[in-house]
Image (cartoon, rainbow, N blue to C red; front, top):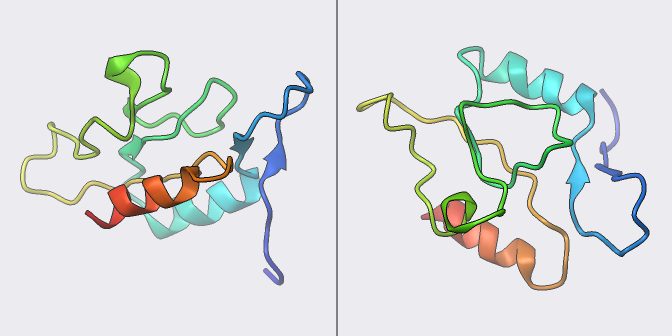
Length: 102
């Protein structure tokens, strides 16, 4: 692989959305890296190609990926693999990166 793969804009609404889908090629590479799978996507949306067991779509308080834990409760003591493609709106990325570091 050469160069940088950029997310593809969501087709459609023309409303200046800030969420983008991750390219399948990138997800294939992530899948090879984390062979046990991805456990959580805190920035999930219905167009996402990734379908982890724990995903937050921001639709309500239970879907708020910034407020909820990214740790999979079923993996007691094991590592949780998180994949995140944060919203690209001004001021959003830094909030998600701060949470990822914690």
